[in-house]
Image 1 (cartoon, rainbow, N blue to C red):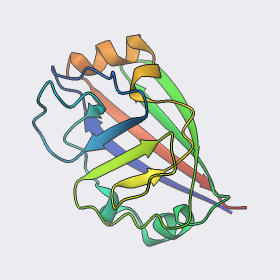
Image 2 (cartoon, rainbow, N blue to C red):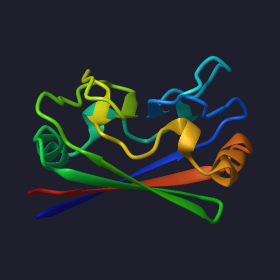
Image 3 (tube, helix red, strand yellow):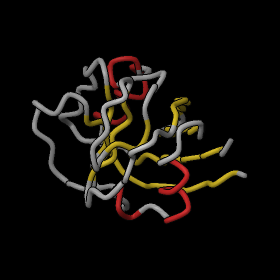
Length: 141
């Protein structure tokens, strides 16, 4: 079974994308230079806004999440996994993690990309405040 969901967001002039263990998108519209994991703002969905089916799927170990970031003609594909304990109840944020740390903002773990590892061409587009589409594709075991 496959579940697909789309999120629309945009970059911000303060996107730095330097964090080495996570990346995040948020519904918040402002970003300080200290938020080095945040890659996009103004998202039309936070964790709690995702469909119940996707939220349930990502709360199971073994679910594979393929996230496609598309911005200004540049695309990055991230592979990560669902994990027992993921609740996706945070109102504004979504965080992809390399580790297995789980909180209300965690969408997946064992991510094969962090903010630091995203293509710099994509980061430049986000720094120019371009629109980004985030496509989530969850494949259940």
